[in-house]
Image (cartoon, rainbow, N blue to C red; front, side):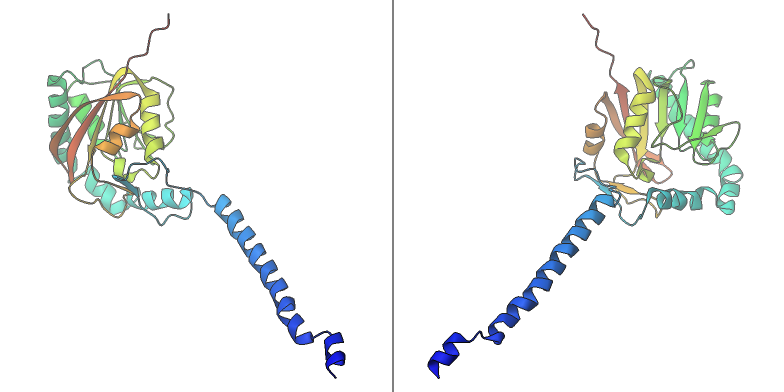
Length: 252
């Protein structure tokens, strides 16, 4: 009997091997699918971003991000407030900001100026009232004649177009590195960029990033020098950061 059993193949021993083969095949296929999806998924986070700048999650695509921003920009109640009740108050405050920049020799009457994320153009109106006549705004929704249509991740302007650029919507940038890259691309050598940002409080539900210090901005503005930082009271924003684009190096 022992010889008979020794010569027979045990089907019970083969059973685990038969079960393991489809398991490993299924595992391999699952990993392959996950790897493929990871390659196809849009990445909003730049791996080189400073920990002091956090991109908010939740956007399935760039189009969904744009639509979220348009929900605020096209809100009829908000647009009515911006063009009526808020108009004079905000134009007055922005005028004070820009006069201060003129006194510090960072803005001039002959500066060609861009206001990024200008909505209905209160900033542009303020610039014109303080003597900077060649000024224009840019936003996802145009508001002629003060504001042109444009995406601050890809400005619709030629290289080195402006002497001065101002924005108080840095927190709305889903790709901050593209936001800064476009400023430095369209700013002339020696030109000034002024940002109003929130450091001591978190911004609203339409913000796409959270900034915790000035350091990440300094890292992003690779072609510019930090000119100054000061506290401001800018409609929920508390810090003004000023950069000057570096002059071009002369070739021998």
